[in-house]
Length: 627
Image (cartoon, rainbow, N blue to C red; front, top):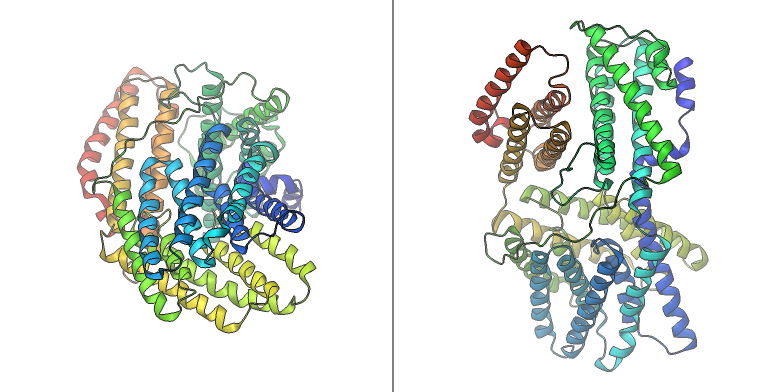
C-alpha cells in the first residue's frame, strides 16, 4: 500500500513529459495538422468568394503543408522562411513542367525520374537541400497525379503559396521554437523519468526481490531516461566546437548537473539489481528527505553499501535538478547565453565516395523499377508505387534498415486500409463526423512519426480512405490497387538496396563501432592527460551518443524477421558495450576523488592497459556480434 501511494503522486503532466520530452512530437504534429486545416480553410474561402480553384491547388496545399512541418529543419525563423520560399519556387517549377508535358506521358514519366534523382541528390547541400528536394518530389508527384492544364497554373500556384506562408506563420508565431522553454520541459521530463525509476526501486524494495521481468523493466526505464537526457543536452547552448571554454559557464554547470544525475540514476539501477536498497531509503529519496538519514562514510565494496551510496548520490543529484527547475521557472535560464545559430558549412561532395550520391542513384533506380511494374497494374495510380520506393530510403543507413522500413510501410498500409475502409463505410454521408476524425488521424500520424513508421503509415492510410469516402471515390478495388502498388514500391526499394551499392548492415555497424572505440579511447586519453571535468563530460556525452549509434546500426541484426541472427545474442553483445560506456563515464566522473598518489598511479596503469586492449579489439569490429 505504501508503494502504491508513491505512484499516486505521479501526475498527468509528468506522464506526458515522460513520454514526449519537451512536447516536441506533440508540437510537430500540431504544426502539421494546424497548417493543413488553416491552409485548406483559406483555399476553400478563396474558392467560394473569389475564384474557383482546381483540385491540384488543394492537393499541393496539403502535401506542402506536411513537408513544411516535417522536412524544413533549418535553425532560425529567417532561414526557415528562405527554405520555404525556395521550396515553393521549386514546387511551382516542377508543376509547370508536369503540366507542359501532360500530352507526352512517356516523357513526363522520364522527367519524373530526373526530378527524383535531383531531389535525392539535393541532400548533399544539407537540411535546406533535403527540404527543397522533398518539396520538388512531392509537387511533381501531385502535378503528374492530377494532370493539371497549363492554363490553370496561376490558380494552382495559390495552393503552394498559401501553404508555405501559413506554415511559416504557424511555426514562427503560433507554435514557435523556444530553446529555453524546451530545455525547461525536458528537465521536467528528466525529473519525471527519474521518479519512475525511484518508484520502481521502491516497489522492488517493498517486495524484496528482483526477477527477470523487473530487470527488463529497469533496462527500459534506463533507456527512456537516456533518451530524454540526450534531448535535454541538445537544448543546452554550446560553443561552436561543442566544448565549453570554462567550467564556471552556467551552461557548463547545467550540463555537469545533468550528467551527474544521469550517471547517478544508472548507478542506482545497476547496483540495486545486485543488492536491493532499504525501502525507507528509497522513500526518503523520493520525498527529498534523504538528509534525515545518516549517510555513513563507508568506502567498502560491500554491495549493500554501494547501493546506499548510489541512492544518496541520486538523491543529491535529483535535489539539484529540482532546484535548477525551480530557478529556471523564475528566471528562464537568464544566465545562459543562446548559442550562435549560424549553420556549419557542409562540404559539397558529388563523388561516388559520398553515401548520399549512392543513395540518390539507388532511389532513382528503385523508382524506375516501381514505375515500370506499377504501370503494368494501372496507368493512373502507379504513382503510389513510386512514392513508396522513394520513402523507404528516407533516414535509413543500411539495406537491413531499408528492408525493415519497407515491411513497416506495407503492414501500416494494409492494416490502415482495412480499418479505414470500415470507418469510411460507417461514416458515409456523415462528413461532419468524418472530417474531425480525419483531422485527429492526421495529428496521430505525425505524432507517431518519430516513434513508429508503421503507425504513421497506418493513420495516413485511414485518412486517405476517409477522403475517398467523402469524395465518392472509395471502392474496394481502388484500395486493393493501393496495397498492390505499395507492395511493388517497397519490394523495388528493398531489391535495389540489396543489389545496387548495398550498404551492408555489418558495414554500417563496423563504422558505428569504430566511432565508439575512437570516442572511448579519446575519453580515456583525456582522463590520463588530466583534462578538466567539463571536457571529460563532453567526451562522455560523445561516447554515449556513439553507443546509441551502435544500437541503431545493430537493430536490423536483432529484428524478429531476420532468419540469420539471434536477437538474444545481439542484445547480450549490446549489453557489453553499454557496460563499457557506463563504467568509462563513471571513471570520468570520479577519477581522482579521494585517491592517494599510489592508487592514482594504479588507476593510470589500468587505464593505459585498457587502451592497449582496446586498440587490439577495435579492428575486429562487428565480428564481436557473431562470436
